[in-house]
Amino acid sequence: MNRDPNRDLAQLNSLFRAPGTGPTLDVLGVMHSYKAMAGDTGQQFSIWESIVPPGAGAPPHTHTREDEAFYVLSGEVLMELEGAADPVRLTPGAFLFAPRNQRHGYRNTGTVAARLLVFAMPGGGLDRMFAAFNEACEREGRIAPIETITDIAAQYGVVIHPKNA
Image 1 (cartoon, rainbow, N blue to C red):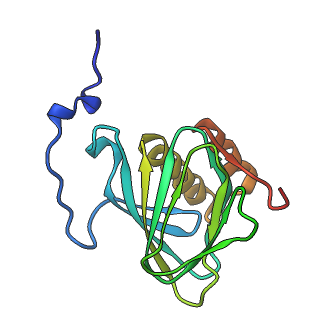
Image 2: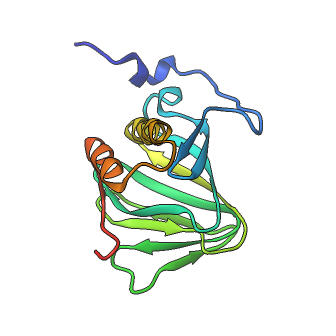
């Protein structure tokens, strides 16, 4: 039996990242500053700080392979959740768990950047998807067309929903 060494938890090492360090990606106008990527955690999870400018966020989408959790460090975001009658306003100290197969999306409706600590379990697919978004946007010199983003997302088991869905 071949074992993936990235999944051998006995092979993991401690990881420390000082403030302001770690890999970064521009994900559709939201800066992700990684604290740990899936490759650092035996593919168990990824964790990053999202710096969300006013008006920016993530369109409504559904993960089929990952759960996500959000903890608001500063600022605020309005979170759309499948099954909720109204969006939920997340302010500093708020936590939200978004399980796979349930649509969610968020937008910073405030006047200052919001900072979120985001967990993805497992995280490898999202790490690769966000890197692909970043590359597509760099090629375009701007945020890539939604059709490109939707096609990339589908490769990683993520469905981007139209705004009127």
